[in-house]
Image (cartoon, rainbow, N blue to C red; front, side, top):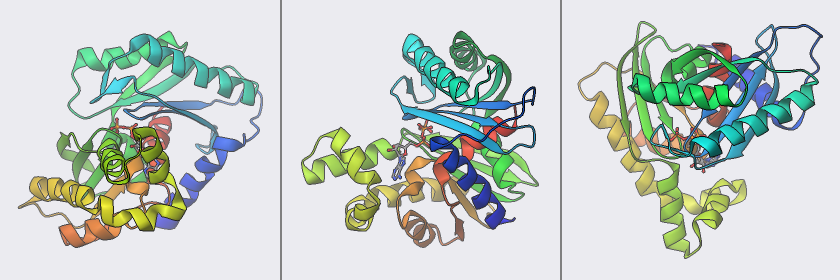
Length: 271
Ligand code: ATP
C-alpha cells in the first residue's frame, strides 16, 4: 500500500475545500455525497479522478445512518451543490452516495431521494467501507470508521468486505465527555476537540472513550487473522488517537493524513 500516495490524494482534496481547481469545458466530473451524522460532504473529481472542489456543512439530519430530517438534508445538499456549481462554473448532474453497511433497501432509498431531491441523479449506492477502500486499497485488514455517531468496522479479506459491525460510540461521545469535564456546552466542546493546539491537553480526558472504541474493535476482531487496522472518519483526526488504538489492540494501526475525507473521496471515485 502506497501510504504517501494516499496522503497526497487526500491533501489535494483538503486543499479543494478553500480553492477550486479549474476544469475544462465538457470534462466529465464525478461527484460523491457523504450524508453523515455530523457532516454532509460533497466532493467533485475531474475526469482523471483528481479532486477539483469540495464543500461541507455540519448537520444533524442523519442519525445512526438514517435520515431523520428529510427536508433539512435535501436543503443542505442542494445548498452545497449550488455552491460547488458556482465555484466550478458548471452544472453537476449525477453523484454516488454511501450508506452504513447493513442499511436496508428502504433506508438506502431515502438517502437516494435526499440527493435526487437536491437535483443530482444517483448513479451508485455503496456501503461506506467499500467507499473508503476505493482510496485505501486494503487487501487484508480491518477498516475502522469512527464518525460522529458510530464506530463502524469492516474486515477485508482478499480485497472483499467479509464482516461488518456498527456500534453507537463516536465523536459525539468524545464531545459529551469534554463538555462534562470542562463544564462547557456541546458546541464549545466540538470546537475544543478540533483545536489542534489543545488536542494534547484533552487526550487524557478523552482517552477512556478512545479505549472504549478500541475495545469494541477488539471484540469484533477476536479470533480473526487481522494484520493491520486502518482508521478513517473524523473522530480519528484527534492527535495520538492511533497511538491509543495501537496500544489497546496490539496491532499495527495506519491513519491517513486526514481520515475525515477518506470516505467522501472514495464515494466520488465510485461515481
Ligand atoms: P457517521 O459516520 O457517524 O454517520 P459522519 O459521517 O458525519 O458520521 P465524520 O464526518 O467522519 O462522521 O466525522 C464527524 C466527527 O468527527 C464529528 O464528531 C466531529 O466532531 C469529528 N471531527 C471532525 N474533525 C475533527 C478533528 N479535527 N478533530 C477531532 N474530531 C474531529
